[in-house]
Length: 479
Image 1: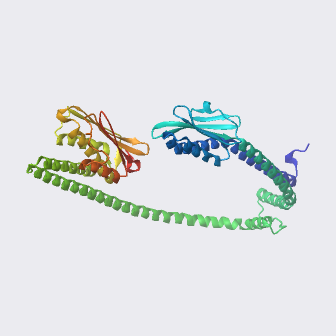
Image 2: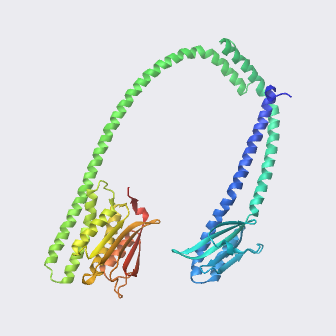
């Protein structure tokens, strides 16, 4: 039996073209079908989970208000997907709340699929997802999808791949038969000429040109190359000398550019330093001006006999002090673009205890804040919100020298940041509407919350608890 390496070059070229085309197409088809086979089920699972989450979210309100008909209408939307065979919604009590089933689909006992997850039955994929309203689970949605379309798709892919391979092999065999003689013979003669030149160093030998195609052009280039080798050697020496001169000249230019860039960088650093000094001076002057206004209010309150008016002036003075503290922390910080909220809340709380004459032994203020950095546009309104809520707790939550604890917490909460100010005092009076306040302090809290696109909530129990959610994009995590 003749080995493949002993075949003539024409035969090798023919079979190499055919076999290479066959292997490439076979691998491509196997890869394509394998990829489709591997990813089909996980992709279906992800699509069913997303579909179940969307339908469950839309049906949550119907579950809460006990409207099975609305829930069934929501489930019927799944009929637009031919893969879906049926869907069921089970309430929190474990009873069937609403059902949808395609007419051609067989009955399915869904009781064994009530735990969230993905299940596989005979020719079916079942997805079970919880339904939430807020943080409360109100039910479970179960969706079943048929797998027949996967099998049909794989068979169709196999037929297409086989047809493509057969047609490609026939075309490759026909082309290789006609082209092998045109390619192999000139290449063999060119190889013989190159061997004579490389072995004997005889650059007077020339290859014979037989065609005007790319191979003929290659032979012309090869012959021209032989003529130019000696000229290229001499030219190479000249180029080396010119290259050395050019490298030296370019090196000198680079040194000059480096020097110019160093001087420019130094100028930029000086400009940035001047900018930092200017920003610190601005924050310092704003803080000083606010303190002057605070001092004027303090002097004015000492000449006011009306207790309510004196309290209003004192409250305004404390608010000015809260804003001034923000500017003070900015000009004392190395980073003039943002401040650390934990340090700010601790300093503001300490000032309020002294301003209202609260004994820390009677009322303890606990500050729990994650490392958070924020710009001045957010620091001022958020600081005033914390200031107002803490002031209210210190002034009204512990009458007649009662003891207790005021808690201030600031932590990430999903895509937002949550500020919680709570106390264990007497709570809000019954006639006070926290969502429609008449007092300036709570009105200011609502206005500032809207300013920073936040949302405020209130819960009562043993004391009061205000929860303010602020968009997380306004914050930068601390180092």
